[in-house]
Image 1 (spheres, helix red, strand yellow):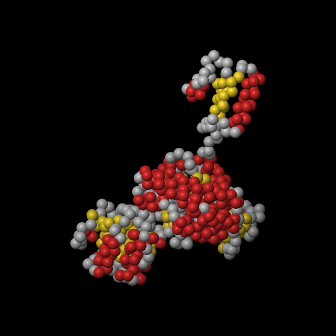
Image 2 (tube, one colour):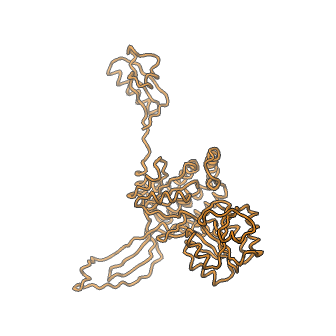
Image 3 (cartoon, helix red, strand yellow):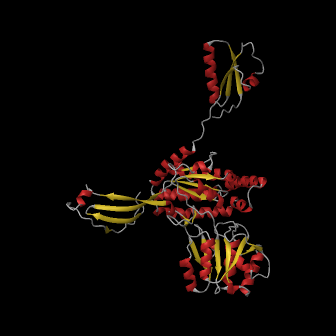
Length: 509
């Protein structure tokens, strides 16, 4: 426990119990004002004018009184607080949870200057230290436009939250006067670990509020000023309905590995950051599911029946609009019939104008008249103005390449042949598969989810951009009238009906 003296007072007295009691009372009074106190014996033969240095050196020349500041809660205590707070959050009426999110959206706008000032401190520190790569530095940066988009997204979440927790998805009459319902409920306590992206904090907080989940947030130290400011505003929004404990910002120095061992307190871990971070979390998690993707190796396949006008627009947007994003194109697959055509020349010219560094795949290299660098791996996430180009012989060949080298994130076909497009859409086994659209549409905000906690490439629970629905599970509610299983035996008087019942348009809260 830290002792923080503001200044030091000295009380010199005699060996008298009464006087010492008065000195202690005076010391306590001084402590209440925030002052540390030393009581020293003024008649001690060794007392000198160097009492302060004597005390610092540990000599027994007096009694030191200091305010003992209580330590903050441990991460285990924060998880327990999030659990209790989340349960209270889930019992609020849907319109109350929506009200919290609307208020948070307003706070992002009202406190824009304060947020941007905090973010500038983080940016200046990051630039001075020079430890962040350009893509991470871009993710760290906030702007007025970003905050406005955040506020719009949060308001979308508020609307969606009206029909989330307690939504009846199935009703069954099991037997006479025995009815079963399956309803949506929060997962429990979420741990979201994110790097560099302070805008992640209000997004994830709003999704947790909408879905009634408790939330532990662990941000990177590079965004500490931004995160603290955004967290304080989140707490202010939560306070309007007394559920501040539901969301906790973890500021302790515990390693991520330590957090991942809290399998009794945390129900789901969602990493938001580099592929290395996600892999580390997946490796460290002990008995806790991890939702996310370790890589965003996204492909655009240009078919031999692709439109000239569409190809360059879609490829440019997929690669250049935000190259650091996980949904940016990393590999461009080109049908061999497109080579040595005006369309191919336009693609190459556009990439050169956009200053995209081209890496050649093995097949593509054999067709080249110019010499880009040879690709080191066909499974590379560049995260910058770089991409690989490879040649394929058919749509089947493109699909085989995607399955072998892709990460099941987002893959696109550009073609005017509807049959070919549908074949691609049905056969590519990725979380998001698009026709004549940029890979950058793979995003919770653009999907109309308001925001996302991340993009999942898993094949269980949630997949693709994960919004409110991905943060919910279900429970079963059975309402009976003194029913027991023995009544349904061969000798019993009851029969199972298992009748499907209409689902009411209502919220169970």
